[in-house]
Amino acid sequence: MTYDLLLREALLAERPSDIFWEWAKKGRLREIMPDLDALRVVSQQPAHRDNAFIHTLKVVDAIEPSPVRRWAALLHDIGKGPAYIETPEGRARFFEHDTIGAAMVPEIMQAAGETPELIEPVERLVSMHMRPISYSTEWSDAAVRRLREEAEEGRGEDGWRDLLALSRADLRGYLPEPIDRGLWVLEQLEQRAQHLEEQEQREQINKERGPRSPLDGHQLLEIAGREPGSWVGEVKDYLLGEVKAGRLAVDDKAEAERLAKEFLILNS
Image 1 (cartoon, rainbow, N blue to C red):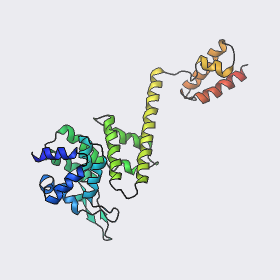
Image 2: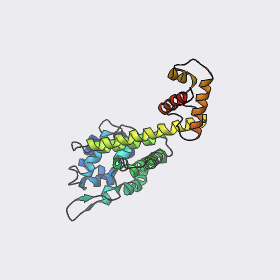
Image 3: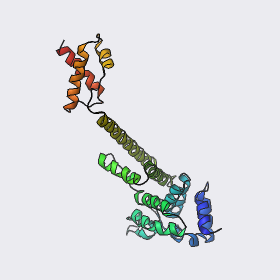
Image 4: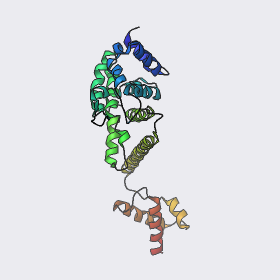
């Protein structure tokens, strides 16, 4: 069996780390993927106890066994080899390892016989894998949208889901170190992105429907406790006018109810 077939089989195994570790001990990994083998001597101390190679194996084990996700996990820190520097204080630093790693992806995956259709999304994931973990509540809505749009470019929602999955696996690759804070950050990012998507969908629906009263006739009858009459149309026209004037959101039923009651009192 050729190395490319062995590599694909290993990546989709239940525990790829067992296979890659065995290759590393026997010297085969140096032949199959020398850039990955080089991570065995790349320290991450004092920030993390594991070297870059052990961390990578943990990340691969922690992510779901699809070709895109497993390849992205295997290569997400591949740039740490050439990016590695040690500060005068003895701290490991990896400036722009995500950018460097993304540039290395095509050559590595082409050598493994992979197609451009698989290489491109892996390259994108490697280049973006640090960004979700850096999220904070100070980000603007536009920044959150840009991150999701970039992740989804050419792949739709799969690209966004793969990026979040890679970030979660990256954090789990540092166990047993504390990762709760990082997972919480990812959860907040995912929830905010979902909220923005739902908001955009509502706005699009409202735009397609055009201006309308937030409350229909049945709702107004229930709120007022009155018999049907011309007053229903009058209240709906009033609420529609508030929507058109920009003083009332088309989906703000609570404010519409308050305005409707106020209108009925003033015109009773």
